[in-house]
Amino acid sequence: MSGGRARIAASILDADLSNLAYAVRRLHAAGADRIHLDVMDAHFVPNLTFGAKTIKHLRKRTGLPLDAHLMISEPGRALDEYLDAGCDSITFHVEVEEEIVPILRRIRTAGRAAGLALRPATPLSALRPYQELLDIVTVMTVEPGFGGQTFMRDVAREKLLAARDLLSHKVYGGEVHVDGGVNRETAELVGALGADILVVGSALFTKGRDMGREIRLIKALADEGFQYGLNNGVPPIPRDRMVTCTALPKHIAHRFMSEIEAGGIPVVMLRGDGRINPDGVRDYDLLVPATVEAIVIERHAEAREAYQREAAAWREAFIRERGVIAPPSHP
Image 1 (cartoon, rainbow, N blue to C red):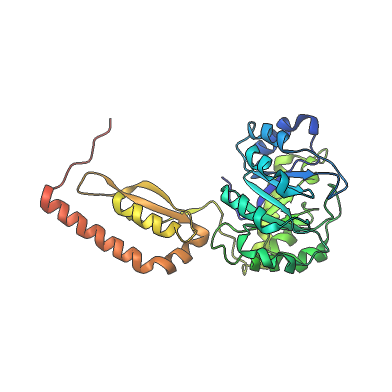
Image 2 (image 1 turned 180 degrees about the horizontal axis):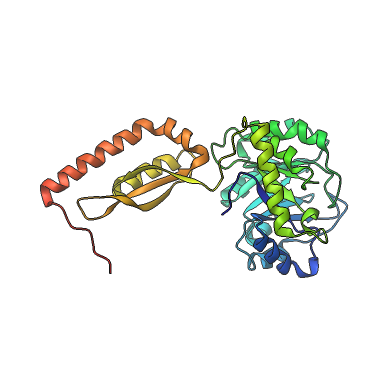
């Protein structure tokens, strides 16, 4: 858990590939939010890195989400291997010659986030036919294949903000990734253009720089860019902040939780510190992400009032029938 809006997907392309487990542990300790895995086949791009077997071994070494970026010609043929390896999200390129829709559906059916990436010269309109199946849009701001390239500012300005529109169907969880040349010099710009996930590679492995400080600096600069570029000077809501939507008896809270989650918004239900019900059990708090609190209130205002009335009626009926039960005492 970390504050702020920007998230860092740390690319291990410039790490010591002979000791990736150590690199991943360092990144985890330094505050990276996920590990970005650049898979290259020396065909779709002129470089060769690692495959599903390596990722499967890395999966045992970290609890961080694994974000696979498949720069390969036939992602559909190899997809099951990457799903089995434990990738939490899988992005492949819209420029491949395979049928794209079946691959996206297989990723989503497996319960993973599905994404499409596009080369700098590929127009964003190429993703439009697949819009409803996308959880992730990855904007490449360098030519894919090698780390350490120069960031393409014109591509970022042209595509990043527009990419957000492609994810308008996602009330919560849709992510715009920016990949290529992201560092302390470019973080503020991509933050001001609304990027959610910053793929950072060579900047984290620059000799003489502290990895943790670099991650904190890039996040802070991206958040500052968002604050003054898109949010009228207001600091962004931290992605990890949860707020209480309502508090209800457990059997009623379960129903309301299911209703909210059916709209694509996650809910955490916790036994609260407030009202103790006549059955001796405290109300349960329903927590939703602060970033979508306004949407939850707008969507479910009437339902929330109805559930609260139902809870009041249940309490009254319980007292009439069984009285008030003292809460359990704890040593």
